[in-house]
Figure 1 (cartoon, rainbow, N blue to C red):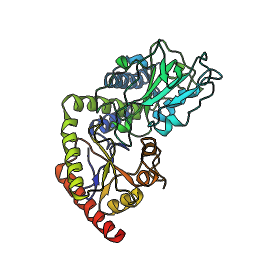
Figure 2 (figure 1 turned 180 degrees about the vertical axis):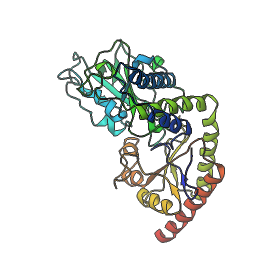
Figure 3 (figure 1 turned 135 degrees about the vertical axis):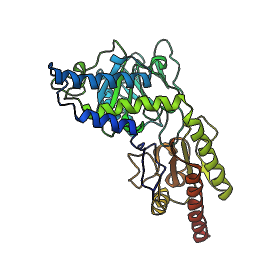
Figure 4 (figure 1 turned 30 degrees about the horizontal axis):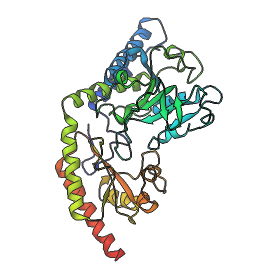
Length: 362
């Protein structure tokens, strides 16, 4: 992974920098001329690139190879939530990504006899890093308050490659993920579909991906996805994220020493090893992001998809924080190549701006 020398990138939950292995795989795939649906040698070569990547992604996610359906990303994969019987509900966890919340619909949830409900939730919250326990089934169904759901969809985008996760032992029927969270290219992802579960096509057309998502596959992006997934699994197994967690903890201790009024979200709860979400009530998150950007540090306020919008965090409000705190939160997310010097430098830059803000607010 390479980044500009003048910039320090601390926004890995938004997008991880492209891995060298992914870049190499994509460059090699560019020379594969055939259409993967063609039966001639060139087409079979392109198909081979896809099937190798499918096996790599399956190994990282802990599922069977044939359960991987390639899409343009987790958002498209989550469109499977639109496929439900009339009157069936889509129940969404409070901390879930907007890609799941877009399908929230409690129609039919007041009927205890109704069937076909789906529970959608994230394995890890990208905004706060909080890990979300998968509920236990009750009489073979997933509970959501008084509702009992027949299917569970897990958003695994932030978890895969960072914390132990296997679709096979999650019990879920569906999962979604995106390549760019793993250090793969943007614009490619996957729907993980439990073997034997039938769905309608996410996109109509030529019947690619066994009829589950039509359109000529993004061979180059898929190749990068597979290589990134394999490298991410290797990093996780080697303990790379344990070192990252130590750096995250050092960052939080340094900031706590400098700012007694800082609030760390979920600090005492299970979290992703790389994520710190914190707020100084009254100091707007968007202001901090701009100040640190000018100082050479890339961080975010809120989730990646909403960080350009000036509004308080829906997730923090769901966690019980007031509107002022929710609008003041920022997220720092680290990666395996983040260094201690970068963390110390960020803490010093943030502290300098904090002291100036306190002086103005006095």
